[in-house]
Length: 84
Image (tube, rainbow, N blue to C red; front, side):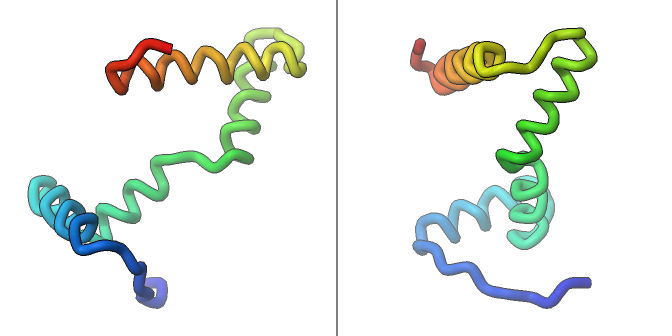
Protein backbone atom coordinates (compact mmCIF):
# COMPACT_ATOMS: atom_id res chain seq x y z
CA UNK A 1 0.00 0.00 0.00
CA UNK A 2 1.32 3.43 -0.90
CA UNK A 3 1.84 6.25 1.55
CA UNK A 4 -1.21 8.55 1.94
CA UNK A 5 -0.96 12.16 0.78
CA UNK A 6 -3.20 15.21 0.55
CA UNK A 7 -4.64 17.09 -2.40
CA UNK A 8 -5.83 20.67 -1.96
CA UNK A 9 -9.13 21.52 -3.63
CA UNK A 10 -12.17 23.67 -3.05
CA UNK A 11 -14.96 22.60 -0.74
CA UNK A 12 -17.30 22.36 -3.72
CA UNK A 13 -15.01 19.89 -5.50
CA UNK A 14 -14.52 17.90 -2.30
CA UNK A 15 -18.28 17.73 -1.80
CA UNK A 16 -18.81 16.61 -5.39
CA UNK A 17 -16.16 13.91 -5.05
CA UNK A 18 -17.80 12.73 -1.83
CA UNK A 19 -21.22 12.56 -3.51
CA UNK A 20 -19.82 10.67 -6.52
CA UNK A 21 -17.99 8.23 -4.27
CA UNK A 22 -21.10 7.60 -2.17
CA UNK A 23 -23.20 6.99 -5.31
CA UNK A 24 -20.67 4.38 -6.43
CA UNK A 25 -20.30 2.79 -3.01
CA UNK A 26 -16.64 3.68 -2.75
CA UNK A 27 -14.32 6.17 -1.09
CA UNK A 28 -12.96 9.45 -2.44
CA UNK A 29 -9.49 7.86 -2.50
CA UNK A 30 -10.67 4.90 -4.57
CA UNK A 31 -12.65 7.22 -6.87
CA UNK A 32 -9.57 9.38 -7.49
CA UNK A 33 -7.44 6.29 -8.14
CA UNK A 34 -9.99 5.07 -10.69
CA UNK A 35 -10.18 8.45 -12.42
CA UNK A 36 -6.40 8.86 -12.50
CA UNK A 37 -5.77 5.42 -13.99
CA UNK A 38 -8.60 5.65 -16.51
CA UNK A 39 -7.23 8.74 -18.28
CA UNK A 40 -4.10 7.97 -20.32
CA UNK A 41 -1.11 10.30 -20.29
CA UNK A 42 0.07 12.00 -23.49
CA UNK A 43 2.85 9.40 -23.81
CA UNK A 44 0.34 6.55 -23.40
CA UNK A 45 -1.98 8.08 -26.02
CA UNK A 46 0.94 8.44 -28.43
CA UNK A 47 1.96 4.82 -27.89
CA UNK A 48 -1.61 3.62 -28.46
CA UNK A 49 -1.82 5.66 -31.66
CA UNK A 50 1.42 4.13 -32.94
CA UNK A 51 0.16 0.63 -32.12
CA UNK A 52 -3.24 1.25 -33.76
CA UNK A 53 -1.61 2.62 -36.93
CA UNK A 54 0.66 -0.42 -37.09
CA UNK A 55 -2.32 -2.78 -36.71
CA UNK A 56 -4.10 -0.96 -39.54
CA UNK A 57 -1.02 -0.92 -41.74
CA UNK A 58 -0.94 2.88 -41.73
CA UNK A 59 2.25 4.89 -41.60
CA UNK A 60 1.92 7.11 -38.53
CA UNK A 61 2.96 10.58 -39.62
CA UNK A 62 2.02 14.20 -38.87
CA UNK A 63 -1.02 14.08 -41.18
CA UNK A 64 -2.40 10.96 -39.53
CA UNK A 65 -1.70 12.41 -36.09
CA UNK A 66 -3.51 15.65 -36.95
CA UNK A 67 -6.47 13.80 -38.46
CA UNK A 68 -6.76 11.76 -35.28
CA UNK A 69 -6.58 14.83 -33.06
CA UNK A 70 -9.24 16.56 -35.16
CA UNK A 71 -11.51 13.52 -34.96
CA UNK A 72 -11.18 13.27 -31.17
CA UNK A 73 -11.84 17.01 -30.81
CA UNK A 74 -15.10 16.57 -32.72
CA UNK A 75 -16.05 13.55 -30.60
CA UNK A 76 -15.38 15.45 -27.36
CA UNK A 77 -17.36 18.43 -28.63
CA UNK A 78 -20.36 16.24 -29.36
CA UNK A 79 -20.08 14.48 -26.00
CA UNK A 80 -20.29 17.88 -24.34
CA UNK A 81 -23.33 18.78 -26.44
CA UNK A 82 -21.47 21.27 -28.64
CA UNK A 83 -20.60 20.55 -32.28
CA UNK A 84 -17.04 21.35 -33.38
